Length: 490
Length: 136
Image (cartoon, rainbow over the protein chains, first blue to last red):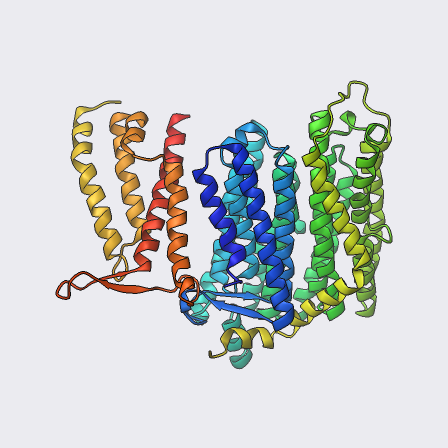
């Protein structure tokens, strides 16, 4: 039952919020819903770390016939992260969404989005995964286009077109897979292929999945939809997209490739490494060319996705653990920075560099609080990004992929540059002459402070967290316990 | 656009469509049909009314707003899913009960409740979309 709670708590809240017309009550309802989901996530995480992999056969239909929900260490960590991001966003939304979006159903849609993301992290069935992708896509598309300004609708169309393309790749792969194997339960497929050897079209299937999830994760040749769309909606929407949606693509790649495609030719994994490296380089160098706080963040988001997929290319336990640690750090830091971007929107009515500056003089505490996630994302020691990058670089050297380690280091340097520029333009330089002096409202600052504390917590607890992600990596790389847990007789 | 042929036809067709939707809903457990398609048919009935008499008339003839229909449908479906949890079965397990006197033997279960919820959600979604598209 615990397994299904992170999905049905936001669903229940979405339904209730649809029936409540008062925006003020909706804000509280959404916040309570997100907090409850965080609670369920933590409880689930505790259960998984105590008792091992948790499995629920929905409706009492056993795998492979019904839909199975599975929570291993990775899934439970990510479900907790969904709760954290949801709680922060709903707290931020007390101050930061335009009235038209709020009355148009912002709060219920946000709940639907959180439901979709949790569902994707928990499902053990590929078709069900596709359904959760669609739930996320519909919710995020409507959230993006709700305000209906020209720029937002244009961005939303690009976003939905590229994501539908991804969905059609995924659906094609699922069709082929189902035609060949007669099942879409990941554990069942893994067990069957383990016994009978991989099917025909194994390699094309891997490529289809790589493309589908690569689009979702915003990897190199397919990333352009992200920077073109993520800076248009307000911070309370783009922050949740940035924090969670690309990570679902990354998570799905890890899940599918470790369970089903371990036997593909090794050049596929080299290809993943190359894609990750190019994504890092292109993302971060493009960020250097931008002159808008939120666009810089979007390109950095793309660039840093490369760090999270590097581990899948190397496929050694320590590399995967490092990448997963990077995912956790990145979810917290990037969500926080998009919220900081929201403060700029409120104070300066925009996030172009010409409008910014001078914040250090007027809001010193807020500036210091924002500096921490900026430098955490840049990877300045001893903040959270640094630890994950050290682990990753060590893993590349240990695996003999020196070129990848060199790229990761160089990109780390470039992202320090890009982040320092962000700090300078946003906070340090003299304010634009016509900067108005509106005060940030405390609900916007509270979640930023909380997420910053969490970032510091990740840096302080880096060793136990690395042990945790190492356990998650072990479960990914040795899928037998996962398969057994799903398929075992009651 | 107000054609008296369309208006008259809509008035005759609407109850038939809704009745047909109920038929689809009830037979859906074992035969083709179910909550989704029943919801679509009901939505089509109201869209037909909208074409004949205008959006306002269609909105008026719907007792609740589509937005609320969507919310309550979700709640109904969720209730159907949660009922088995309270008797210690997994989420969404079907529970069945025999209703009425012995010789009729009506079998009622949570899948029907779930389908009713789905039906409400589909009507709500389709009508929200069509009404706001036409009103723009």
